[in-house]
Amino acid sequence: MYSVWVRGSALGPGLQIPLSAPLVSLARSVSGSLLADRERKPKMCENGTAPRILTADTMNPSIRRVEYAVRGPIVTRAVELEKELQQGVKKPFTEVIKANIGDAHAMGQKPITFLRQVTAVCLYPELLNDNKIPEDVKRKAARILQACGGHSIGSYSASQGVEVVRQDVAKYIERRDGGIPSDPENIYLSTGASDSIVTMLKLLVSGNGATRTGVLIPIPQYPLYSAAIAELDAVQVNYYLDEENCWALDIKELRRALEEARKHCDPKVLCIINPGNPTGQVQSRKCIEDVIRFAAEENLFLMADEVYQDNVYAKGCAFHSFKKVLFEMGPKYSDVVELASFHSTSKGFMGECGFRGGYMEVINMDPAVKNQLTKLVSVRLCPPVPGQAVLDVVVSPPQPGDPSYKQFAAEKQAVLGNLAEKARLTEEILNRAPGIRCNPVQGAMYSFPRIEIPDKAIKLAEAEGQAPDMFFCMKLLEETGICVVPGSGFGQREGTHHFRMTILPPADKLKALLERLKDFHQKFTREYS
Image (tube, rainbow, N blue to C red; front, side, top):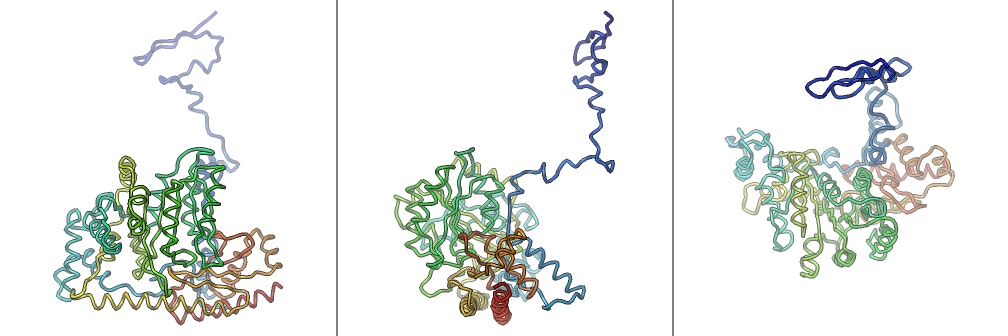
């Protein structure tokens, strides 16, 4: 039998191959791969191009499951309508009113002067020499700049955040909670609250199949939670708020959800939003105590979303932080319950959404896990340093006697007073409309009214593959220019229909919006009855 000798190299010996072997075997690279295979061209598409590597079929399937109603299809259509109006296309309205998202400044709220002055000086330190800038503004900005690399907020910070800002956050928490200690080493600054919420969920999610982490979230919920759970391929566990009792949290419902979930996953996280988004309820101290006891009994990690803590309007309601209540319940709970709480510069009286400032405080976290958390946040280098500067002003505002105090206090009170009045106005006007029922807006920035939708409209929506409240909201947008978010994007009990709208527009515009919305619902009901 004839054979051929393939010469070896420094990387390997030669090889004698029988000629009867496939000819292609004679051509191998040093690595051992077939040269013919290497030269094999990818399968071409009909138009002569190579097929895409990343397609809807090959992409991460968890991302396909992510939905975020607040910026979903209805908002996309609202942007298209704005462009059509700019192009002169005739519509039955003259402007699109985006009442879909809690963006205070976009709705016309004026920035807080002291906050913007400090930020301006941090961005342009030459203003430290400007006699028009108040001295307390200069002191605050100089302290922040001194703590930044190169004395510039254009530099990176430590991954956990600028140290003096974390110190000021800890002092703020201590003042808020009546002197209960807060350790700056337990503070993690973040890109808004959303980033730290997702980071914490990343730490908590593990397991497969029946051991996969379950995350209890309120329904209705803020879609960040369902989106993050889908992206992380965790298990969403719904517990329903009591609409008939002003969206109160019921421990019996929590227990039902937990026991049901334990049949198919490992529930170990309980998420609370207080004050509520989208529902606007403010939890009582007793409710918070009950939740903490429940978490302790069932060995659940608590995540307390408290970004609306400054937004409480209803008489008899007050904000109670989970940390404060936890520690006041004594060592039986404060030494055991694991808690992460979150706050943001985007809400409250500030409304500084675009700066993306926020923080997370962790309590009773395992030191080894805390090291992993610090490693995880370091992957993103650091939160935006201008956002950290804004946060510092929020948690360490002017005090009585400071040059800027009177103006700061007046502006803060004006914002919160206007929001309280608009919360009252929203409830009053919507409840005058047949077929609409709106619970009191006790806090936060939204109302979540329940609407009646005729059977004919429900069937038409289903035929178009839409949720009935999406059908309603899209019709509302096309005929009035009012953009609100369907309740189905937040979750709701089967057979009920809602929408979420912000109370942020100026009072005169809000009143006109509410009247138009009320009139549209009556027209919609007649048309589809």
